[in-house]
Image (cartoon, rainbow, N blue to C red; front, side):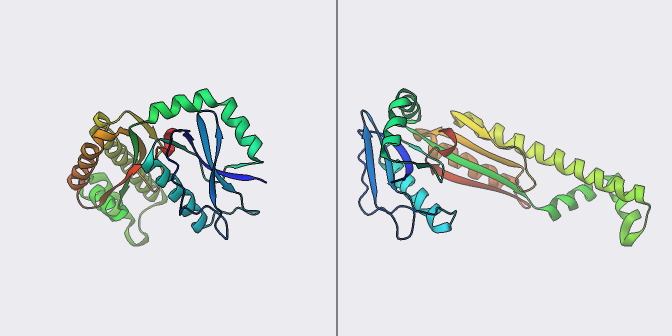
Length: 237
């Protein structure tokens, strides 16, 4: 019987699994596979696992419930082991590394920070502040201007947007790094000018959250800073 694996914990973890439901339809019952000083929290894997909203939510609910009671290594969605023997083998083979990482994550939580910039707002700012951009915009309005004018305007706006977003990302990182132990920075994307996960000591969680809120207020209109946490350390396992 294949097993769906949610997290790895120490054997001393309370493992309060009563009332929790796993992935699948109907939802699977959870249990622990123990091997020495470690445990894996598992359930019977559904025959056909899909990225359905209900299953993803069940996966994260189990992990957050476990984390609330003690340190865990939360696994990515979709980790399936062939059988219980395979789980035992992994716990035995990687036992020292798992134990070390559990110790390193004890007393620490993850916060994720995403920054978004409204396209219309940044475009207005570029046209207000750049004489060259205004001139090119006027020249190309309602289909006017040359192909070279339109190309130059597009390149100028793209460069300005990238430069401004890079500056915003650096401001976010500079403001929050003093409160963190470690970080995982995702590459910039069209959607977010910054997408970063921070590992934060429990005792500094409020301090970190307050700093994030103050930064979001300081940015003002057209810039949104989304902060999620405290969370299990998904990005640091």
